[in-house]
Image 1 (cartoon, rainbow, N blue to C red):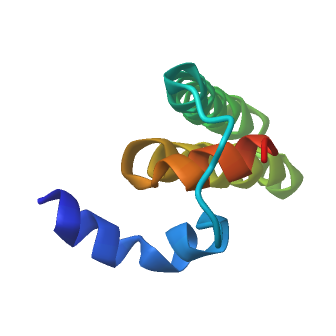
Image 2 (cartoon, rainbow, N blue to C red):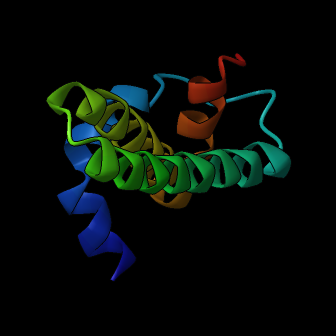
Length: 92
C-alpha cells in the first residue's frame, strides 16, 4: 500500500528527494513535520469554516494555502525518505 501511495505522490516527493544521503537527519524531524502538517490541515478547516460564515471569495486564499502546505508536509513526512525530510527542514 505504501509503495502505491509513493507512486501516486511521486511528483511531489521528487522535488524534495536529495542527490546525496542526509547527514543531520533525526527522527524528531519527521515527527515535527507530521505535526506541522496536521496543524496546517486543521488551520485550513478552521479557515474554511470562517470563510463560510464571511462568504467572501478572498477568504479562500488562506484555506488553499494552509491545505496545500499541510498536505505537502504530511506527504513528505509520511512517505518521503530521510533525505526528503532533511531537505524540507533545510538541514544538509
